[in-house]
Length: 274
Ligand SMILES: Nc1ncnc2c1ncn2[C@@H]1O[C@H](COP(=O)(O)OP(=O)(O)O)[C@@H](O)[C@H]1O
Ligand SMILES: [Mg+2]
Image (cartoon, rainbow, N blue to C red):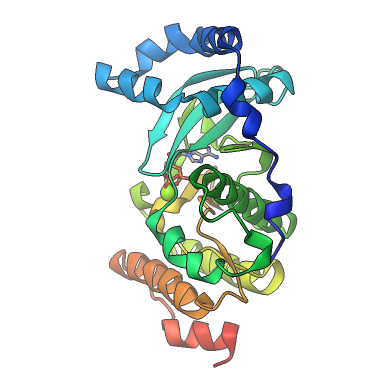
């Protein structure tokens, strides 16, 4: 496992952020306003949008803008329990997905027992904000490792504190179709996902640990796996049960859709060998 603690910047200066900077950032973020109003269905969405930009997130977005990793935000794509995903635009006009983590998942908290006591994570586990950064970095690292090993995932582009910027999968701000919504799935889809799971395990040494039809896009006839925050290294003490759950989810989805699946036990045996 990598030494995450070293990668986390000193963020104590966040508290001193100048109110003027905040105003400037807010103004820049409002550039999406016109477009955004067309896209939102009711005003509750707008309130959610306002809530997300806490001081740290504002400052982080501003940094990412100054570093030319982002030009402006163009509206919310998804508001989840732990993170919100925005459609962002870069200076050159290309779309990006901007994932802003807000809370640490309960799953991650459960896994803290494997982090606590490890000197590499000293002082991190008690600080909620740092935990969120750790979680964000974990997703970035997992995406990068998967990407570098040739697995179809959104290309990770930048990370700062609790904000992750990655390749946008979709068009004109509309994300690609999720596997769960694909009307007709075929054998090839199943085989592709199983080959990704194997490649992730054997080459990237990662288990996704939250794999399901909700975290897979089908786009231009390709399957793309995303949402890697829960991903663990294959040496994780719970690796086998995470892998088993991933395989069960995939098998369950595809067999419901009439596809002949391979027994989870057989796949587990092939991968883990026990
Ligand atoms: N790279 C991306 N490109 C386009 N849309 C994305 C991208 N990543 C996530 N999304 C959208 O945001 C939603 C939530 O993203 P996800 O990473 O699954 O977060 P969560 O942890 O909330 O499940 C996805 O279902 C999809 O609609
Ligand atoms: Mg998800």
